[in-house]
Image 1 (cartoon, rainbow, N blue to C red):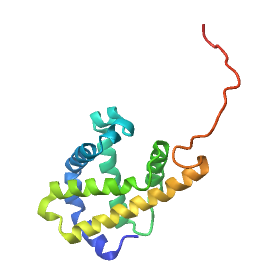
Image 2 (image 1 turned 60 degrees about the vertical axis):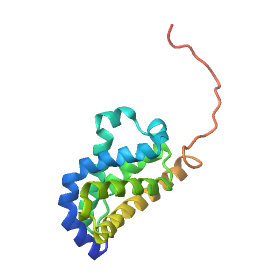
Image 3 (image 1 turned 135 degrees about the vertical axis):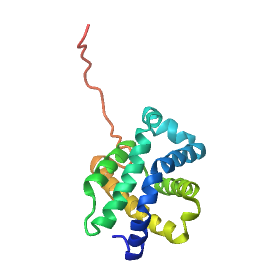
Image 4 (image 1 turned 90 degrees about the vertical axis):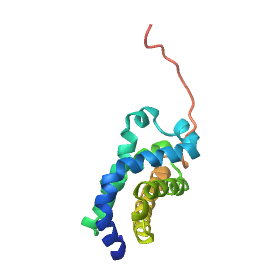
Length: 167
């Protein structure tokens, strides 16, 4: 649950963050891929990056999570979190990658919003980020445990028969 102080700050800054979220997402991905080009090559769908689908998904999910925290503080948005966690688990996202995302996301927020990002504002949004990240990490860890032996879920298999089905 979001602390009362952070909830008040997030509630007050949500309109400004929401209005700039598209630009924040653009800057975030520019920074992330400049620092880690292997992520674009190996992890992210290039078509979704080019069309902006991924950028809108990130921006929308963080804004939706923050809104949920301030409007319904006693409920967790499990539908949103489960959908994201299943996608992350299908890609083998690791807990340590959340720190990388946080670094570039908060740098993008500071670039776009400038002086509006006071230490209090950053601390409040940092709390939102880690509440969401830690919830996702927990769900992803359960998914990895249920469906395989860790990230990727690779299991040994053997081809036992080959059947030609088309001529």
